[in-house]
Image (cartoon, rainbow, N blue to C red; front, side, top):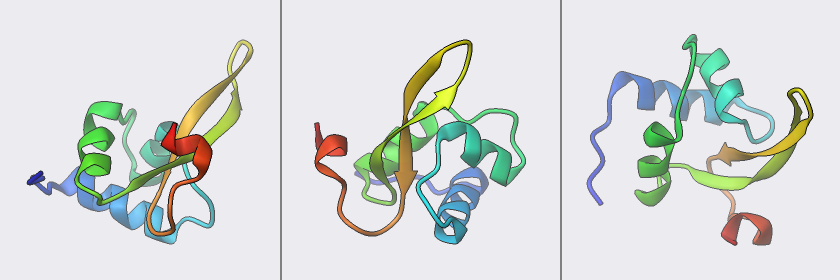
Length: 82
């Protein structure tokens, strides 16, 4: 899959390279100065192999929910492959 690299995607890659652990979409958005990042931005990046789904993590909302985390490098966990 050919992926059009734009400024937002370049910033996402940079944020993940600088991260010490996988990040949620909300964490990525905060790191790159955006109000929101959607899976419509990251899913093509995953398909193209630019980033990977690293697993899930529980985050506080009204109740705790599991959200997907993203990272660069290392193979995806078994949980993320499902």
